[in-house]
Image 1 (cartoon, rainbow, N blue to C red):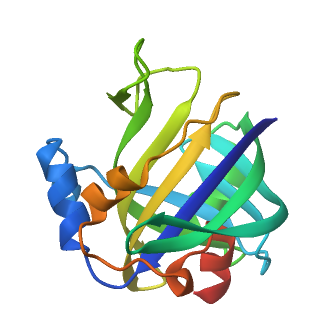
Image 2 (image 1 turned 180 degrees about the horizontal axis):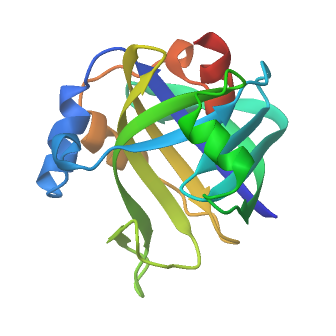
Length: 197
């Protein structure tokens, strides 16, 4: 079991400012290979179960969400979560049924994702690393184009991991979002997102 906290926004159109920031880091959504995750239909806003590339991941929100100002124009809700994961074989009958038979109990969500891990260097400054790098603690910052139930959406999120929580300075969020407004109405987790589909 792993503990994490996260904040996420969903919006209908590409956010040009966030796109520009990631482009400066040589990351673009259009050049990433799409990945399809399969989410169990639960109709809950605090629990999420997904099949992702041979892994079942279960994420449960614990406690209440907390409203937070992340930047000059960025407000949202932080969720504290616990996560479990275990491997499944892609050739298992139930796994194949979810992926290939379009099981109505599961929702296919295709994502083009870009992201970075943020941690600290030896002097305590931000260190930006590829998402594939292993670090003990930090914050994963992600931007994604999502296709689900025939709709295209975008998502921007921060997910903290590890035993040590690093503070994300509002100036960094302002640098990423510039004058874009990210509001509380667009801020919710994947479980709520699935309910709204």
